[in-house]
Image 1 (tube, rainbow, N blue to C red):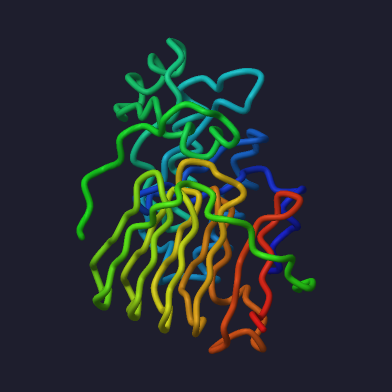
Image 2 (spheres, rainbow, N blue to C red):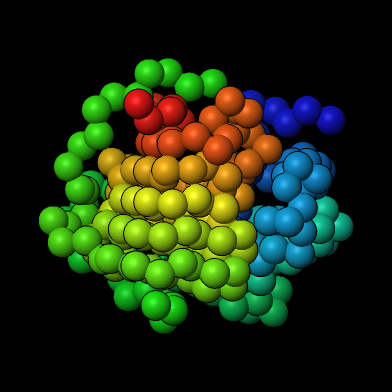
Amino acid sequence: MAARPDYEQAGELKMGQVGIANLRVRTLDVARLGEEMRERVERAPNLFARAAVVVDFGGLSQLPDAAAARALLDALRGAGVLPVALAYGTREIEALAAALGLPLLAKFRAQYESAGRDSAPSAPAVVAEDAPVAPAAPAASASAVSRMHATPVRSGQQVYAQGRDLVVAASVGAGAEVIADGSVHVYGPLRGRALAGAQGDEKARIFCREFHAELVAIAGRYKVIEEVPRELRGKAVQVWLEDDSLRMAELT
């Protein structure tokens, strides 16, 4: 079944800083939400099958009761993902989380809602060391001083540049993850995941010399390899955010 365009979706899925997906519920339609999640899992099972998902009810005008919330959690589990927490800490949501027996991640949403703010980013988790013509690349968005990583990032490894750009002067292997609050530059093959603008910077970009990425994301908006035009695979590519959509083009 073909996925609906994003503006019609009942739930907006964004990737969090440490690989946890955040499902912000726009419309409390349990059947639709379960169907949409099942479609995502079927399109990219290596990324989403049994993935940890934080459920965010902060976009609803009325919080669901415990019975409706449990029905949604069951639908998500049936679709192939694992709801692990609720997001955003109002007292009502905190009470709902307690009733459901789930933890509350009060600061999770701030990772993609802080674009344009001057406040410092919150502390990260500890980690290991159809495209239009692309516009000119802007200056580094997070800091003039980038974090340099000179060795290959191998499967299972994660490299994070807090408050600045990340430059990887080597390859990023399948199953590896590179993350930056600013832009991500990979001067080699990119086969894992690359997440730029991890704290919500929508001006961040991703650049790579050879594109094979499993997933790319900027300020939470993401694409998986199945959604990337075939003519861009294996090419030098840049990725940027425009009109709330992820854009990709070959670097020339």
